[in-house]
Length: 254
Ligand SMILES: [Zn+2]
Image (tube, rainbow, N blue to C red):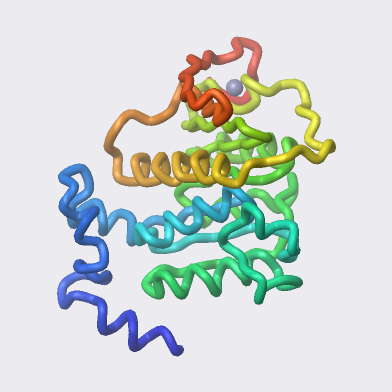
């Protein structure tokens, strides 16, 4: 293991991680050494290693999340590099999850990256989710978000949902067993077959908020984006908060 030497050198005697690596977040009283230990013990599944997933994975790896699973069936293409900052020219034609693993390990060899070159579907979703504490939805398909939403309620795991299109993005938390859930808000299928433009930095904003929500929920500080959605509009340069309410007829959430 070529990374063993680096990680051994960085570790403190009493902690399974390097204190100096994380000192800027450990001094935040909401995190501290205790919070850092929680992150080290946490398992997060990121579904989609594209525009949003790239940013989420980077921040989770930097922050010291112990186990990061990445699911994506695609290979890296030149047209991805405009916004999918986890990949690079050397990784073109490589499975995105392998590209992700290589680059994330370069940033933080103390975290475990588990790559799954696969697509989430109704059958395999439970196998993927069961190992993880929390799921981050960054797929490009509406259907995948619906499948993740349902499965997260069955297994009682939080889901951080993000979506971006053109100059706008939205993000909110789904926290079982209580609604509102993704199914309450998007009962009708969203048309995701048309290829739309995306300003890369907008994915950066939304992915960063998703990663922030993960850390807040894992450690348990701050106010989660539960029952409210943040919408960022880059053209107008504004953030809006929209209150979300449970659909009384939704059968997924309480
Ligand atoms: Zn619901």
